[in-house]
Length: 603
Image (cartoon, rainbow, N blue to C red):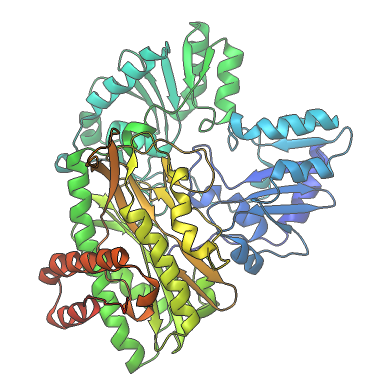
């Protein structure tokens, strides 16, 4: 379990005093670092330090007499539990954006500060417009005032960088740099500045332990159109083996030389590709002031990283078989354990984490295990603590969302389990979620389709009953990288990317009844070629399910499923049984055989 950063309840008052000294009327605090990472090292957990909120996405605005924290639908209940509502107004970002809230609270002449390392140019656009229209100023600060009031702030990450094992590399970093160079030439760009940890890890085939749960390398890089690269990272983090791996085409420079390198690009009047939604404003402004020509565009690593090669997908499949065996051993254990003695959310999570850790290729969790029983299961990104831990009780639902980082793949799977006998309502809601899950799994679609065009399929059965869920249906997943990656996603609204073969996404519709129970069924799926039906004239794509673990049949109401849905579920369970039986112990085999028996309907 990762230890959350200590909340400082006195920080808000001290921050306001410091803002007064700086001549600022307000300050923006995103959950972000200079690399725009989802999971942050402890040294960058400013939002948690200020507000007590421990989620992976959020934003705070502080004025001298008011403050607000903005969270999306995944974190509404969590924020209510963690944040003092007397100090911060808790706002749904789906309903009110931070810039809209700022607009309503700005006064003529106000000066609003921001840390240029924590915001991207695109992310600041709405704030710039709101301040301009209100006659206020948006001002960059050299030293984040939260850092100035954080005397025991943890040291920045300094983990040793590792080169990927050649057995798990399907494309050399030299070939990737050439691929990026060709992309730069197509856009008439001389270079690109990269700061995203996943892009750097992917481009150079390196990994590190700079942040929890994701093997990112927090560094900066300049890649040019001649396929040469400068990597800005503390040299002591690169040993002789990694230097040999990177070769002569990659120059290693300390981070404090990044500014001069940007100035040199400007002095040469270079055309620089700038991913405005992924690059720190500090970098963009330095390039602009130095005279560089900025070309707005996408990070050239993101799309090729998302489209896994057949060999990578094969590795991911192997990882999912082993991961599914660990999860199945856990589910079999759970059924017996809850009958023989108390099982708590914490003890269950620790048992599952330990089972995964037995794998020789395991390198850690891909995110903190979500282990929620009863009402805690309704908190979408619930994180169990000693204070919140509760016993799994008969008549309740237990939701476990977990995953592992393996050298050959990243996993993310959610199962909802009935403890004892479920109610009719639980079975109805679970089956409607299952219908949405199956609809995504079975869908065929023409090339060029975006994920947002499919999202309604996952919600249809819930909508018919006047129900819904407040999160996306699917996010991209990396290969021994981020459990959340772009540009692919399945959600109600864009921006989304065209779904392409080799992309891996989650398929995770859900339903959450506050203070009662939560339901989510999640498998990972990959985009594949699909046959064009007879008479059709479009190239078609579809999904192949990667995750292999039983779905709790105790929660399925067969009469709500049609024949095609029952056939899918039965066929899926045959796959699960055949793949996992050789990898589990005899007791688990008996349970697995029972858990994957064919489902029938009275239709």
